[in-house]
Length: 252
Image (cartoon, rainbow, N blue to C red; front, side):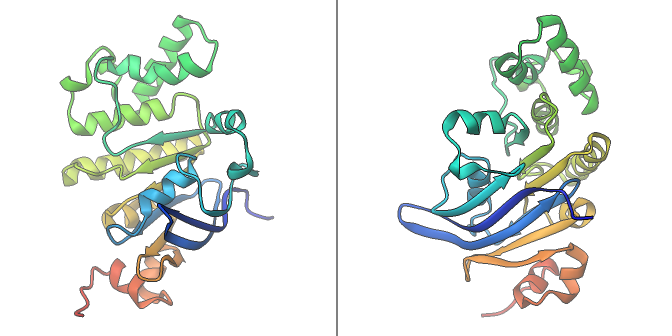
């Protein structure tokens, strides 16, 4: 039985200001996978993610989400497709003037016709999933960095997305908080039967929760390798990938 592919990039080229950052990007993500995108600083990881979620337009190629080419859709069609995905950003991207509960409620208020009572119940449910139900009335300034990440995750889950994107989910966290967030992501992925694509530079996260890693190389401006992290660490066809995953410093 063929894998259920829910994200597929075909011959994608990305860049800005007339400059190509990455080219010949081809990969598929199957339902239920946790795929980590990694590479050197400045290689284009976050730029690639922003192209995948429609914030940037690729120079060429197809970005297929749930079988629809995002690049070919009009603005309204893109908005409808985006309702099926959840996104979290490095900072958590919470609105400081709203409580944690109000932040989580935003997607529900904007994209559904649910009553205030129904929305409040869903907000409590999502905050409970990330261990923050008791903080529903707290302001973002009153909680820790790790809790802000969890609140951002709860908001990303508000519309029950099948596909979740994370941009550096562990950035700025101490090792213990980072490991806790990794385990939470994995637990939620299994509980909700969702699919995760995350940009990260944390090798501990990659080895602990990802099913596949996509390694970008800024020198060749394309994918160096794609597969299971442990297998690539030992047997990648790319010396760069083996060195990267083994934290091996190579002298110039």
